[in-house]
Image (cartoon, rainbow, N blue to C red; front, side, top):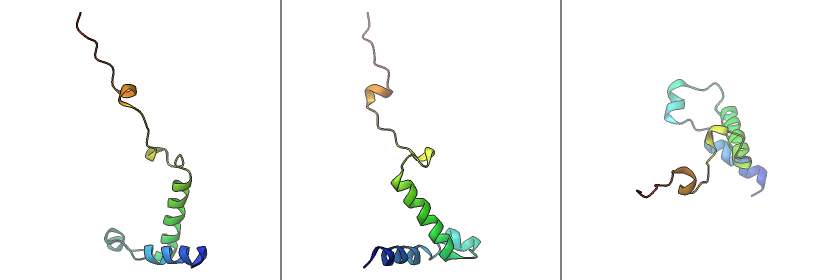
Amino acid sequence: MTHEQSDQDRVESRAHLLPEEAAVGSDDPQAQAEAILAESDLREADQGAAPDTVLEHRTSEQTVPPIEPPD
Protein backbone atom coordinates (compact mmCIF):
# COMPACT_ATOMS: atom_id res chain seq x y z
CA MET A 1 0.00 0.00 0.00
CA THR A 2 1.40 3.37 -1.00
CA HIS A 3 1.30 6.49 1.16
CA GLU A 4 -1.32 7.97 -1.17
CA GLN A 5 -3.53 4.87 -0.83
CA SER A 6 -3.11 5.02 2.94
CA ASP A 7 -4.24 8.67 2.99
CA GLN A 8 -7.24 7.84 0.81
CA ASP A 9 -8.19 4.99 3.16
CA ARG A 10 -8.00 7.40 6.13
CA VAL A 11 -10.22 9.92 4.33
CA GLU A 12 -12.76 7.29 3.34
CA SER A 13 -12.86 5.96 6.88
CA ARG A 14 -13.27 9.45 8.40
CA ALA A 15 -15.87 10.46 5.82
CA HIS A 16 -18.39 8.26 7.62
CA LEU A 17 -20.10 10.87 9.78
CA LEU A 18 -20.05 10.58 13.54
CA PRO A 19 -23.49 10.60 15.18
CA GLU A 20 -23.05 14.26 16.18
CA GLU A 21 -22.08 15.17 12.62
CA ALA A 22 -24.91 13.16 11.10
CA ALA A 23 -27.40 14.99 13.33
CA VAL A 24 -26.50 18.33 11.73
CA GLY A 25 -25.57 16.94 8.32
CA SER A 26 -22.68 17.63 5.98
CA ASP A 27 -22.71 19.02 2.45
CA ASP A 28 -19.49 17.19 1.57
CA PRO A 29 -18.34 14.50 4.04
CA GLN A 30 -15.31 13.70 1.87
CA ALA A 31 -14.02 17.30 1.93
CA GLN A 32 -14.85 17.55 5.62
CA ALA A 33 -12.81 14.41 6.32
CA GLU A 34 -9.86 15.72 4.28
CA ALA A 35 -9.89 19.01 6.23
CA ILE A 36 -10.15 17.29 9.62
CA LEU A 37 -7.31 14.89 8.84
CA ALA A 38 -5.09 17.63 7.39
CA GLU A 39 -5.52 19.71 10.55
CA SER A 40 -4.89 16.66 12.70
CA ASP A 41 -1.69 15.88 10.80
CA LEU A 42 -0.47 19.47 11.27
CA ARG A 43 -1.12 19.34 15.02
CA GLU A 44 0.65 16.00 15.27
CA ALA A 45 3.67 17.31 13.34
CA ASP A 46 3.81 20.62 15.25
CA GLN A 47 2.42 20.17 18.72
CA GLY A 48 2.65 23.92 19.25
CA ALA A 49 0.24 24.56 16.37
CA ALA A 50 -2.78 24.42 18.66
CA PRO A 51 -1.77 26.41 21.76
CA ASP A 52 -4.72 25.23 23.84
CA THR A 53 -3.64 21.62 23.45
CA VAL A 54 -0.01 21.95 24.48
CA LEU A 55 0.87 19.57 27.26
CA GLU A 56 3.35 20.97 29.71
CA HIS A 57 5.89 18.62 31.22
CA ARG A 58 6.75 19.81 34.71
CA THR A 59 7.72 18.09 37.91
CA SER A 60 5.75 18.52 41.11
CA GLU A 61 8.58 20.67 42.49
CA GLN A 62 7.92 23.13 39.68
CA THR A 63 4.17 23.33 40.31
CA VAL A 64 3.67 23.05 44.08
CA PRO A 65 5.26 25.44 46.55
CA PRO A 66 7.40 23.55 49.03
CA ILE A 67 6.02 23.12 52.52
CA GLU A 68 8.28 24.78 55.01
CA PRO A 69 8.80 23.03 58.32
CA PRO A 70 7.42 24.79 61.40
CA ASP A 71 9.85 26.95 63.37
